Image 1 (tube, rainbow, N blue to C red):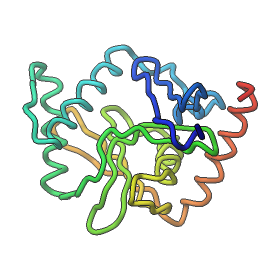
Image 2 (tube, rainbow, N blue to C red):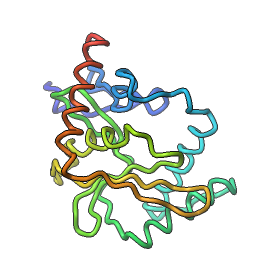
Image 3 (tube, one colour):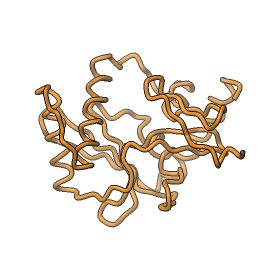
Image 4 (tube, one colour):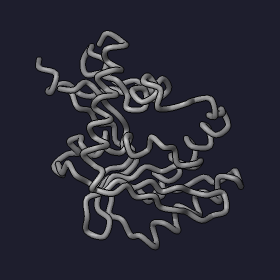
Length: 196
């Protein structure tokens, strides 16, 4: 059976992806392998907070009940609700694993859909917005997101703040092709380093 007929599998704990028996490189692993992500500042508590906030934000978007037991998490969800109310995005996909089988990489897009009528990919951050965010988003933006294949999507990070507010960081479309070249070069180096 050809790879494109096989389902994409994801191990959310190890952050790994497969098509059949072929492992695909995760977008963030590509960026980390080539030294663009410095994991030194990641902590177990910030990672757990991000997971909890992402799960709760997905429940909000799906209209499901949200268990807000941690007051610290509540402020991030207040920020997300504020973003939804003010920006009014239309989501076509939430926390969706997608892959470029030909190039051999995969990732989980936080949100994709439309914002003010424009196609968009969105990443939610509960910490600072890293310098590598535009490369992560360009990797997602160029993937085939169902029937909505548009390569040059707007790329936005919604930074959810512990104050209950949010900020938006958008990366200019004029930089899309440059960022795409950088990501594809990083992918080639990462594949060479792992022997993929």
